[in-house]
Length: 412
Image (cartoon, rainbow, N blue to C red; front, top):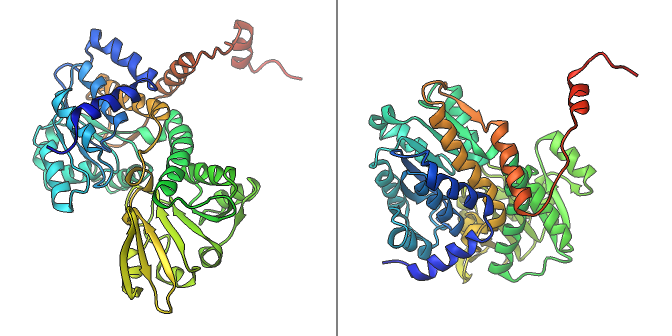
C-alpha cells in the first residue's frame, strides 16, 4: 500500500482545523442527509483538503469514489487514509503514468455516478467519450478550475455537453480567494521548495494576469521581486499597468526574466524561441492546470543535455552552454513541489462544491444541458459563514435603506 494512512489521517485532521465552513456543513448534513443514495464520482487533487470534502459528502449520505486530477498532485498518505480510515474508494498514486491515470478515472466511472465532480474536466471528457453508456444516469456535475470551465463551455457551445454542470470556479468565494490568495501563496511555496532561490531582487515574469496571475504577482512583489506581466488581453494588461507592474510581450520578457511562471490556461505560452532568448540559469514553472503551457517538446529538441539536478528540478543545457531549469515537469508547481493551497482558503472552494451538489439535486429535471454559475445565495452564505468563523460581524441594511434601494422616486 502506498502511504502511511495514520500520518494521512493526522494531516487530514490538521487541515480540518482550518476548514470551519465545510465542518459546519458536515455537521448539519450528518443529521439532514441531503445526499442520501446519491453516487458521486470525483476527479480532484487528492490532498488533505479534498479528503475533508469527501468526508462531508459521505456525512451527507453520498457514496463517493475519488481519483486524481493530476499525476503529481496525489498525497499518498492521504489516499491511504481515505481508503482505510474513511472508507472512500480512492484510485490514485503519486507519479502514476498516463495509462494508470485514465484507468483510475474509469474505475471511478464504473461506480455509475449520479453527480460528477471535476478539476480540469478529464472525468467529464472521458464520460462523454469512451463511457457514453453511463450518461443517462448522470444528474449533473461541478467543475473547480478555470481550465475546466473553458473546456466545458466549448462543449456546451458545440452541443456536446450532455448534462448541467456548475462552474464552481466562477463563484466569487472561489476565484477571488482560492485563485488569488491560494495560488499566490502556494505557487511561491512550490518554487521555493524546489529551488531555494531568493525571490528578492529577482526579475519574476508572470505569464497571464487572471485571478491566479494577480495573486502570484502580488506575492512575488511582496517578497521583493521586480515583477513583469505578460498578457494578450488588453484589459488585463492595462490593469497590470495600473497595479504598478511592468507589462511587455513574451519576446522581451524572455530576455529579462530570472523566474518565469505560466498561469494562462492555454497552450504554449512559452515557446521554443523564447528559451533561446533566456538568460543562463532561467527558472521556468507552471501553475496552470495542464502541463501544456510550456512547450517542453520544443525545449527538449533544442537541448544538448537533459538531467535532473534536484528533486522537481530538471536542467536543459542548450547549445553554447546556456541552462534552463524546469520545475515539476511543467506540471502544477504548487501541488507537485508543495502542498497546494492552504486549507483556510480551500474551505470556501469546497463548501461551494458541497452546496452545489445539493443544489443540483434540488434542481433535478429543471436544468438545461449547459454550464451554470453558482447561485448567488450559495456564494453569500459561504461568505457569511466564513466571516462568522473568523469572529467578524458586519452591518445589515436598515428597512429604510432597503426601501431606498428599491425606489426610483427620490432624486437629488
